[in-house]
Amino acid sequence: GPDGLDEEAAIAVERAGVAIALRQVQARAVAEAHEGFAAVSLEEHISAQITQADTLAEPAATLGWDVEPARAVLLATCGEKERGPAVTELRVLAAAARSALGDSAIVWIRSRSVAALVVPPSDAPSDRHRLAAVLQREAGARLGPEPVCVGVGRPGDGPLRLAVSFRGA
Image (cartoon, rainbow, N blue to C red; front, side, top):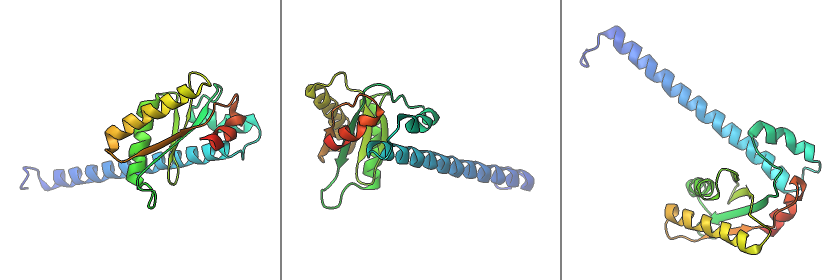
């Protein structure tokens, strides 16, 4: 053949390429399903749909979340107020949140914002403001000059108190 491969080798290379492409599509689908399950679990949790701590234990264990420390809900959004953020902007904002907030943060994408469960150093408003500022700096470096709005609720003592923190964010 023109690439120096005989017909049989060219067919084998083509089949290998198709197999690799299929694996990538499957991996992306699994990752998206995982993110969707995580987002639904977290939304139920912060919106007070979960009323017993052990109801959260199963998805938390499955997804590797540590829900024991006092966590606060952080909400962030960007983009023009009228149109809201594009999907790509939300993904970049979520990546900025994962980077800025550290490994202990549980970050997910909502319909028009990014949310995170964070562990502030204390209950002091200054610690929550610091978390917001760190995220705003990282998001600004990735998204450019558009404003990033961040709110952080008070940390809840126990996983069932996150609905209060969510309302405060």
